[in-house]
Image 1: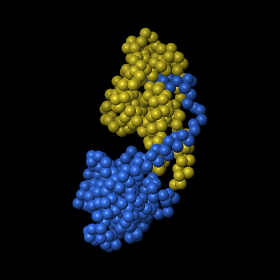
Image 2: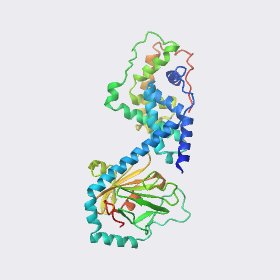
Image 3: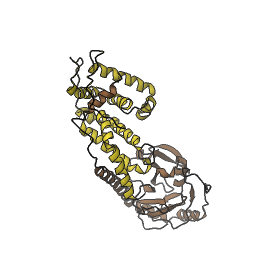
Image 4: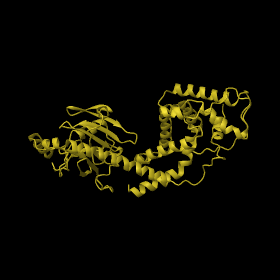
Length: 226
Length: 180
C-alpha cells in the first residue's frame, strides 16, 4: 500500500481541525519553567529533610580526628589529568585540585578545570564554570551539583544504574532523559550522596567516580566550613 | 546562556515546530486531539529541561518527536489508559469504501485497532519517513520486528480500508498536509 501516507494525512482531517494557526509558545515555555522549578524545589526539600535528620551525626563526624586528617590531605592534593592547553572543546573537562575555601557542609578535593564552587548549603553544593551568568547556588541547570540523598530515598533507587568502582566502594551511574548524568555513592562517612553531572562536562562514569571520591559531606547541620 | 535568551530560543523552536509535532502526536493518538496535546506538552517540557543540550543538535525536532513516541508508548502501558481508551472497533468487513468525508474517521478507527507500538511503526515509517534502522532504534527493537510489524499493520489497514482489493481509497483525499 503505497498510499499509507495519504491515508494518514486523511486521518488528520485538517479541514475540520486546522493546525496552521499562529502558535503561541509562551505556554510551553511557562510549563517548562514550572517543571524546572518544581524539580529544584523537590530536590531541595528532600535533601534539606535528610540534612536535618542526620545533622547530629554529621556534626560528630566533622569533629573526628579522621576528618582533620582529611582536611590536611586536601591541601596536598596534586593536579590530576592535566590536559594540554589546546585541548579540543569536546574533550572531557579534567579535574584539578581544589585549594580554595571549603564550602559549607562539604569537603571538596577536586573540581573541574575552570570551574568554581558557587556555594554550599545544608542541602546542596553547586559548582559552575567560572564566569557563569547564573550565580545562584540554588540553581542547578548546567552545573555540577552535589546533593545529600534524602533519608527516605528507597535503597533500590540509590543503587539505580551501572555499578562503578569508587575508591573502596561502589557508585552507581546512569544518564537521565535530559542528558544529565546521575551518580550515587556512599561517601567516606557512609552517607549516600547524589551527584548531578551536566552533559557539557562530557564525563564518563570513571571520571564522575574520581570526582566523587574527593567529595565528603562533613556537616549536615550546616554549621561548619570544613 | 542567559535565561532570557534560552527562553527566546526555545520559544522560537516551539513556534516553528509545534504544529508539526501535534500532527505526529494526533496520528499516534488516533486523532484524539486532547491526548495528542498531552503528548506534545510532555515532550516539550522534557525538551525545555534538556534544551541546553539539544539546542546544539543538528535536528532538535527529532529529539522532541522521539520524546512524543516514547510518551505514547509509555502511556499505552499504563492500566488506566487501557481501561479508559476509547476503542473504535472498525468493522471486520466494511460494506463499502468509505466516502471522502468518512475516510478520516475510518483511518483513525483503523489506526486505533492497531497496538500502540505497531501504530508507532506506521507513523515513523510512513509519516516521518524514517528508515527501518532508525525506526528500530527509536522503538528499541530489532529491524526484523519493524519490518514484520509494518507489514502486518499495512495489511490490516488494507483489509479494513480497502475491502475490495484493487479499489483504492477515494482520490479526493488531499486534506492532509505534511511538513517536517
